[in-house]
Image 1 (cartoon, each protein chain N blue to C red):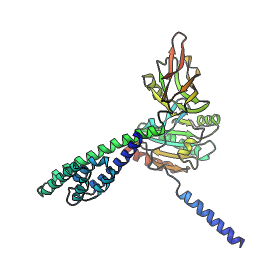
Image 2: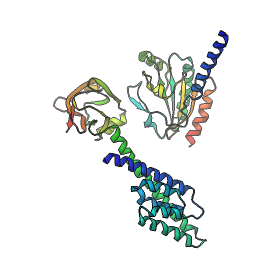
Image 3: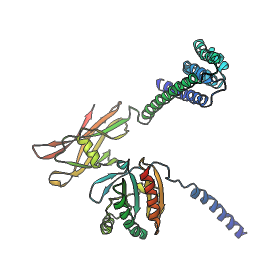
Image 4: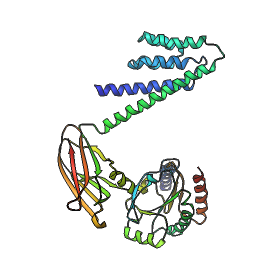
Length: 167
Length: 243
């Protein structure tokens, strides 16, 4: 009898969690949430001011190992496609600003890094796992997202970037 | 009363537009329905109960239904219907022209309705008797490069705004920014604004300005002004109450 009750509970729990996962909202096709954050050099950067350019927003954290691999790859993409109208923005979601700055400085990337010590922007971009990359087209609409990073993902980024730059 | 009338008017106009658009998008085989409908719908705005079924009915019925409250509407609605009925069969351009004009008219109506809705929404969210609006302006700016403004009303932070180089530049060129729009109760309130940025000799600079004000029945407008005090080579931060 207990087993039956336990099984029933498990089924109910599963039934209650499955729809929430299935109905997880997606950013694709929607306008990218605007934000303004302080960059490494002390200037403030506003997302909407890059309207008219293709923007790659990369959310990273010091504690996410994949970020270390992804940032040099994004740096290469930035140096290659910057002139074609691509903007790469690195958004640190580390709460510890001092260590995040140290880490960003050590990575020596050429693109601007901004710091989000709160959680509002992460919530707006529906961060699930770090790192996360979002590609925004010239009209400010999210066209591609990638959660996590593994070798070879940069090729997918390049395909999408070229496509968006051609539009 | 006026407010209620406007709400009802907007709802009625929206319903009429929706029905008229439906008719234009799927015209009847006779091709005269849209013409009859818009003509009947225009004067019927004051009588919503009769207007909606009129719009959905076929052309002869529309003219008949519209005739009860407004005879003029009936005649104007019937005229294009008969005109279209007697027109030669091989004249599609005239029909298309009429349809195009109607679509343009509907688009204009939608824009007007949207504007009214926006105004209504503003009035609902921020009614004039509780409204408080804050503006930021900057004059010269030789001694101060603005980075951020934090506003507290009654010791509660209501706004923290970071300025990009472009925005600061726009303020220097004479732009005035509405930084906050909210609601406050009638009575005494305290507003504190903190300005951060780079002061003289590129030093980090943070200053505050305070104002105690009385919120009356009408809307309240306050301006946060950043000016240069040339004699002291320092920036000056003021809050001006626009009564």
